[in-house]
Length: 124
Figure 1 (spheres, rainbow, N blue to C red):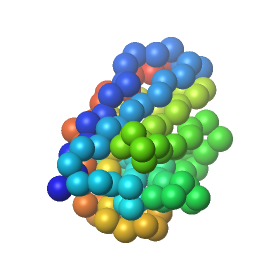
Figure 2 (figure 1 turned 60 degrees about the vertical axis):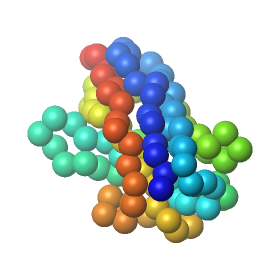
Figure 3 (figure 1 turned 135 degrees about the vertical axis):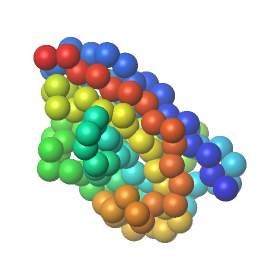
Figure 4 (figure 1 turned 90 degrees about the vertical axis):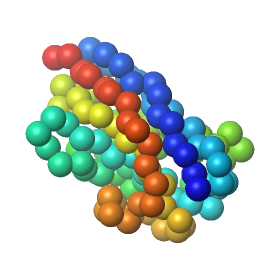
């Protein structure tokens, strides 16, 4: 069993940056693919980014490509989401998720465990 705890969210002005952290505990997650999702009020949860266990493969939603970067440090049991040039439409609760598989996927149903989320609010 892996537990995930997200942090790093907050209030930022449009054009600013934030780095989200997702720390894993329990069973090692170093062989798991990891992802970030987000959910805005009244909307469905949507894929943001994912990374393979080796960091060789990454995937991004079109809406964040070129602005967000997903990283991981298996030695620190941590996954990061570096968010630059933030926009008001990036406002959402951001969730970290993991799957017991090595491939990068975008479907939320393919992830096996989730964190509680961290709020990101971007003011226009």
